[in-house]
Length: 246
Image (cartoon, helix red, strand yellow):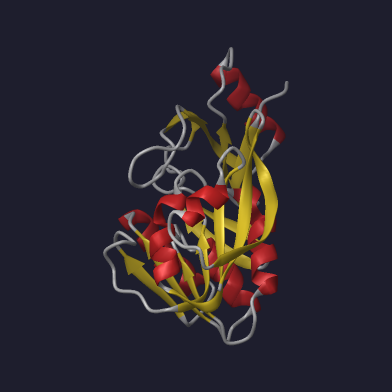
């Protein structure tokens, strides 16, 4: 049986999330997944794409425990979350590791749309001397971000709740914008808070003209690289646009 799904959690307890595509027998599919993966205690299905201010998937429980809070393990750190309340992608573990490895000592970093703080935690685990500010609007994600900082015994991560356009921010050496669908709408805020010579990591979709979007905000930039992060939809990929502020 071929079923597209993600697993979030650990060997002790995990949940499986089936994609929004049509499945002939949902319960049979869920039983198959739980039989094959003994750690899976709940199978969820996406009902639609991410939507709303909090950018979460509408999900329904097909089979198993209605309590879907889990602790996800990756790259030596822990992330507690409930996928019914917050957005998290286990597929982007490689991207988080990639970013963590390029951070320079002493950098001050801003993570917009930071969710449960996976980027911030990945960065701090490898670079304990850097400072990371996170901005997130979903109060449930804020709750889990604070829990996760404690779970990993980290310091130097500041969690800011609110709209990134309305909160008080500093100036930064590096800015992450991991919201592929609409991050470019906040480019003016990123450039406003970027130091001269800073790097902005803008995540987006391959069918977007990034040069056009950036030039609506500033001419003082240079695109350093565009890297494929992963599949998003047929003929569309999620990409990271590395941009230097001149």
